[in-house]
Length: 221
Image (cartoon, rainbow, N blue to C red):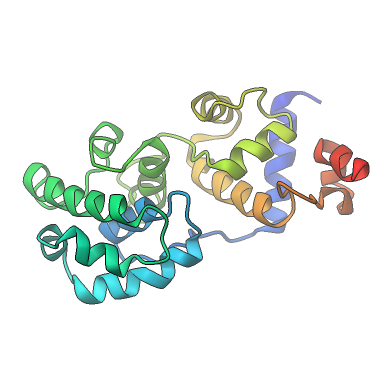
């Protein structure tokens, strides 16, 4: 089986297991999504979804958040890792979007990564989930690579790399550009539910067990 053929099989199985996928982070527009993704770094989506309702209740708009005090925002972000740093980042990115982008979240990668607390992974989520999927002003420009994607792609033999940037480039070569977002989300769900870091369950599925190296890990365990 060629690598391209394996990628097609992987995508078929992912669509079988997860027919419809949406980001689990609650949001209503590009800005609330951006903030949620910044807050989600090294924090669970559930934890983020618990604090963002209060955040938006207190600060209804980007302008309101831009004038908030870091201490007040950090108090709302209790339960979020690095709450003080993230509080400062979402305040500063609000200010930068207002001052440099006329209050509109940019959809260019180079502009998004110029914002405080925004790296390539965060920018990819915002571009793919909002500007490519909802507003349809662009195609996805990259592949979201988190710990799940990195682990699953390696176990499936879709990459030999562990560096996120190199993993992203490998995956971008294997899947159609218009599918990068949905493939990435499905891999994340697969990594959370089946191809987990510990006690993976791929061996329980006759199709996944044929192509995933974690079957060997399960047998050793």
